[in-house]
Length: 104
Picture (cartoon, rainbow, N blue to C red):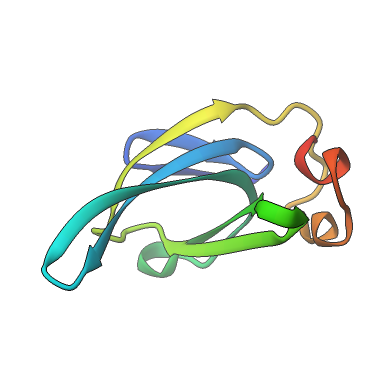
C-alpha cells in the first residue's frame, strides 16, 4: 500500500481526509476545508502530489490536486482509515455514483 507523510500525518490511498488550505481572495485570506477520499499519490521527493476526490452538490464529482510540500496546506485530518484497498490508484471511483463512490 502506498503511503505518505504529510504535515506529520501518515496518509494512505483510500483514506478519507480533511485538508485545511489557505485561500487568498484579493487582500483577504481565509482557511477552506476540503473533505474527500485520497484517490492517488504520485511523484517523488519535492514533486510529490496527492489527489483528493469528493462528491459535491448535485452528485457532481470534485477533485483537487495538491503538492504535498505546499505552504497553502495548513493541516490535514484523517477522518477514516482505508480498510481493504488493493489498488494504488482509485480512478474507478470516477465512474461510480452515490454511496458506492464514497465508501471503500
